[in-house]
Image (cartoon, rainbow, N blue to C red; front, side):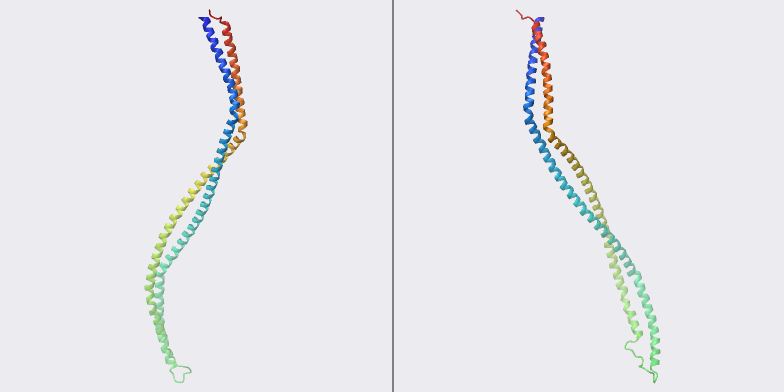
Length: 272
């Protein structure tokens, strides 16, 4: 029974060693047979990846340029809105001043002018009476004082003509107040739009930062893939050499197993 066990063990070791040697031999041949087409396939795949990344990089460049142009346009628009807000604010202040003048200042001025004209009218009437009396004296050198429109009458007509200005000032005050109110609403809306434009610029800046990050990542990947493409034949050769060394080492180990199996077979005499 012991002899049979040793013989069986010897046969198993020999079979395993022979199979291992065949595997090692076929492996070495297969590694060097597969290496060229594998290198070509890997090179082609890496080339396709490089082409795709180059296309992506070009697309990101176009996107970045578009974002730069958009940011420049939005910046000019923001400047225009800032100028408009300033202009509207100044206009509203001017209108407030005009409303104050048309509602209080100008009517008071007209009233004061009318009072002055009435006073001057009275004085002119007295003065004209004196001129008329003096120039009517016999043997007075010169023409008698007799104007077509007496001065006091002219002054009275001017004072009377100023009566309608207060109504005009009231109408102007209402119109200017309404215009100022409308401009105030427009100024508020323009400021809100200006804030929206600022938010748009912030979003564009964030998008530009993201595009730059993708461009940097794409550039690094392209650099690594180009290095891999240039060194792929050498890398596959080194891998094939490494596998060959491993298979040869495995084959040498199988030789030891084969010799040990033969020892078992020699030590077990044939059964009768």
